[in-house]
Every structure is written in structure tokens, then in C-alpha cells.
Length: 209
Image (cartoon, rainbow, N blue to C red; front, side, top):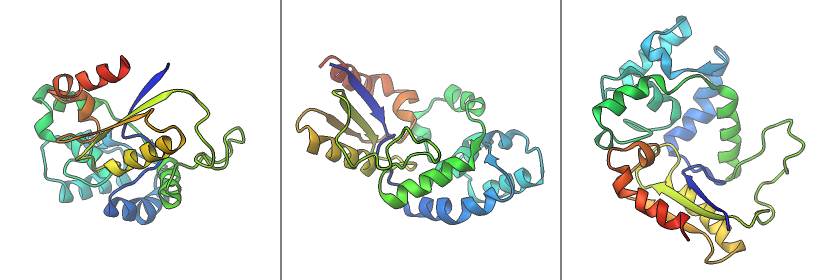
């Protein structure tokens, strides 16, 4: 039996209310000026549009002195920070992440806006091999899914994983699993300084089932 472990990426994206405002109203406006946003701009914005966005982030995000960390939070949701808790990262990881993020096309945010509005993921336009509705039929796999959700995730709320688990469980009861992880957010589930001790045993146990 194949077991798939998934953290926060699910069939049913649920995001904070302010993120919905950003993705539906603000992102399309910025997309008229630039095809992407890049957290690396925090280290050196290349043009006037980038400088304006970095200036906005400096005005609104004061949670740390890492300019890429603050840009990441502005880019990916609502939170100070958004993708992790600073308390879960050691200093070396917080410094390392400066170079781990790059350009994000605004086509991604447009697709996520459509998905949030529909209540589930929608296919990318122009891909006829994908079904029109990804949740209109049972999963076409015998894989067992283990869903991990950080209780403090400010990018995709834990309800994202809960709704996907409910969908999977309806089609195959008592086969899949859901774990909501207190004190964790999005990426710190994997790169947090205690993640190997706090979350690793749960992942190993599920993979061994």
C-alpha cells in the first residue's frame, strides 16, 4: 500500500480573510505592473515596482530583521510571519532561508483565487488532460493519504486539510489520517528546530502502517 504524507497542500484551500482580499483585489492590481513577485527583492529590488513593494513591506512588517522573511510573509498570506513561527526556527535556518525563495508568477495567485472561490482546487487553464472538477468523483488511486496541518498555519488554514480529509474519508472511511499539529505553521513542520522530535515520529508511524 502506498502512503502519501501531505502538509497543508490539499484539495480544499482555505485561507485567512485578509488573504482573500489580497488575492482577489490587490494581487490583480500588482499583476498589471509585474508578472511576478520575488521575495529576493528584499535583498535588492531591481526596479521601481519592486522598490515600491519592498517599501510597503518595510512599513507593514516589523516581525524580524530578515528582509526576505518579511517579503515571504507579504507574498504568501497573512501573518507576522506567515509560513512559520520564529520561535520554531534556529538562527542558522532563519538566515539560510534568505536564498530559498524566488519568483512567484501572478498566474499562481489567479489560479488560487479561482480555487478559493470554488472551495476546491481547479485545474490550470489549457490542460485538457485534467478533469474539469477535481472533486466530482472519488480519488482515482488506492493510496492512503496522511494529512498534516499546522494549527497556526497562516498561509493555508488547517481547515484546508480537514475538508480534504472529510472528502477522502467519505469515499473510503477509516483509511486515511489527519494530524493537526499545535504550535506549528506551514514550513516549520519540516524545518523547525524541534520538528524531527515533535513531528518526525508521527510521520514515521504513519509510513510504517
